[in-house]
Image (cartoon, rainbow, N blue to C red):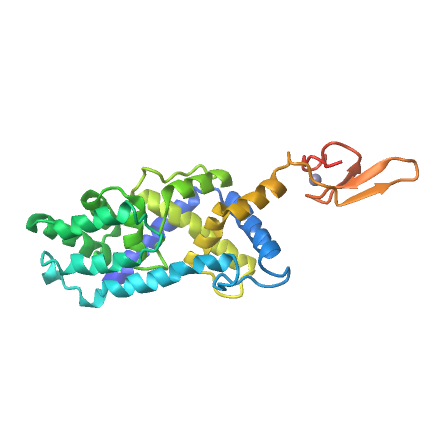
Length: 296
Ligand SMILES: [Zn+2]
């Protein structure tokens, strides 16, 4: 078994294990809801969704591909050599890559602190930092590499996740813990990231997005192969003000919704067809099927 196979196999194993404990139904409901929103606002009803079409709202997230391309290229991984650890060359490559974070890492706090660590490192620390960075990009044990990076640079989740993301966008993702906490809370997932920067927490995050990727693929709603990053965009979209406004208005059963149909019967009674679930019922304040409050 070669080295590469070994750590990638290990990665898939932990993602698979992390997936067992997650609320898949909640993820499916959220993805369905995002698709519904995207179709209503962005695409024709029958049209397949294109996550990379920058003329559409959902395409606004595709800048993350450019971030990856630029930052990954700036890393110049083909030039890294284990013998250069401690020379400052590796800190230099990573510094160049960090010029391309866009807003995936907080440029006000996260990035300058990290860059100043790399720039001002004394010889001993430089050795330690470069060993850590080398193990992120070339180490056989990614869990250990994650832990080392946290030891060296602090548990700054967006920064550590970004370092992994620009290694391999098919396996790793950028993150913004506070925002994802609120997204996951609204999804009813009971999973938190803030102040929990660890390998197992990160793998659980990736497992959630991987499940969304699998579900999107299975749903056949996209005009292209669904990448992990596309699934990340679909989940992230729930943080858009446009989505939240739509969701609050249409998904909260306590916001009165107009019935789809109102039919006055010969005996004078009125029957409604629920705007949410299509169930037909006699005039009532709420739909007896789904609980939706009826707008009179
Ligand atoms: Zn209903």
